[in-house]
Length: 393
Ligand code: LMR
Image (cartoon, rainbow, N blue to C red):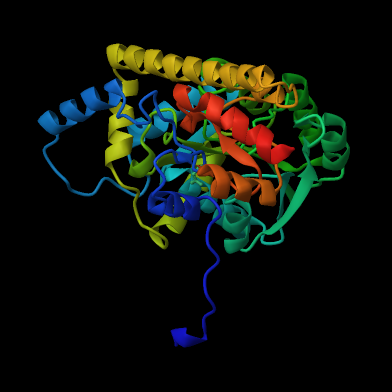
């Protein structure tokens, strides 16, 4: 049966990690996959997570099934993080999913169930897995103008002009904060404008928020999403604890449906549970149990928030340091790095220039020009600055 298959295409991000591991060069640098590393190049388990794990180890009495929706305390905590203080909080329902990719897929399946001829509009460019997940669910994908490669910022006028054409059969996917891959976020005024368009033309907003806390802070990073949720009847959200809780391998995420009433949101949740049953049945327990433990304990929440503030602060200083180092080597053409938000920046380097980074400097970055600033160590900054300038000349 399987002989007729052609070879799989390698994932542009995950395949980099494999190539990096096999590289024997001592000064190699992994700026590919979106993982935060500290000054020693490690991705440590956060203190709050360690404490929650110890608590769970001491108190958990069973490994019996949890249920299709996963951990309901976790689900409530995710809604609190993203929607507290909004009218949407009381008309939303959440399902724990295996990572945010699981949430993307469950929500895509839900859209397909409700309206099979849905078109999902993605930012151009967008996270490399958005298109495959939406298409695997049977949805049509289209791109809207987003990133301006000349300014390295969002082209709001072009974006809003195109989104004005979206209608009731369309879903517009927005990045809640820290746009992946570009690092260029829309402004609060853009969130207001997209909300007004959605209300006027009837498209469904779909927010993917995987980096809350890495842009301007926990509250600030949810401000656009909150405004939208407060001012719209129906929208969907995919969220992740991979980065802000450092739970990457635990696959901890949630799918949230906001509706005009709690009853409607619960109905959608019921359909997601049915979809989950025929896909993976239940999400893994551990990551969600850790997050629920942290977010229902004031002391642990305080520890977690402080660690997140420190990671964010370090990210800002890496961005400033790299920009400064490039300036010191005589160029201001990478100043945009300091203005970008979150882990990533699209550098504008071509696939050939990214290939040169790998071959000549042992620096691994994604072929679309994305560099993971959060993967950088302070002592590597000058080397990276030199490499970026060399290949871009
Ligand atoms: C990334 O964009 O590097 C991460 O979100 C990892 C992933 O799942 O692709």
